[in-house]
Length: 57
Image (cartoon, rainbow, N blue to C red; front, side):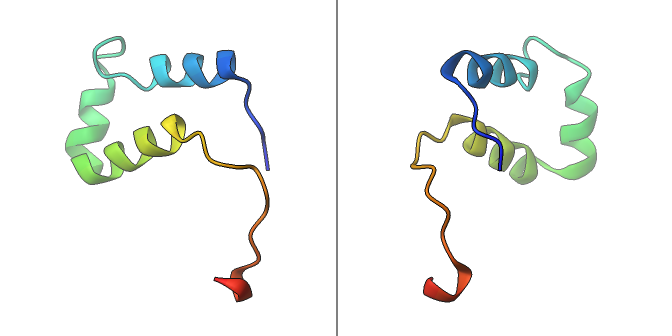
């Protein structure tokens, strides 16, 4: 697992923005809006960093 600082998270959010990186529009068109929005959701998550064992879900 990699834990990002707030600054690192902001840098990734900016890098994954279609507005700041128009070349990503091709990826959105290829892989779908749903996959792109999932990536954005993960980068914006502020959840805990505790590992969760799959057998306890």
